[in-house]
Length: 82
Ligand SMILES: [Zn+2]
Image (cartoon, rainbow, N blue to C red; front, side, top):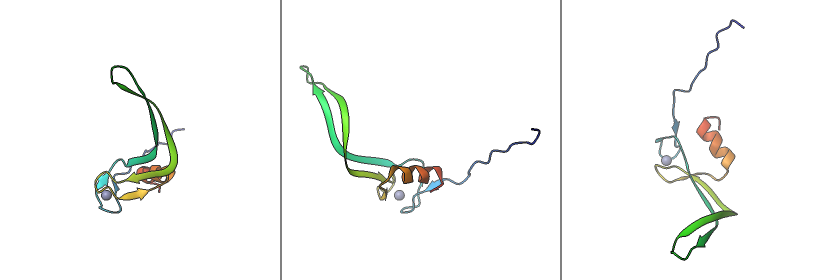
């Protein structure tokens, strides 16, 4: 292969459809139960998080508007393919 390969990077950032801010991440809120071990010194050690399947919200970090409720759609949005 002698052809030159060109990597085209997207120059345009991802913008929130609600507030139009340029964002590079989303906040993900998941409802469920956290299970901790409380030790004798008063320290809590997180052992496990168990989602209850009710809330899985992806929000804009700028305006806190709910944008997605499905992880694959949120990931596609951040990659610019959604
Ligand atoms: Zn926003």
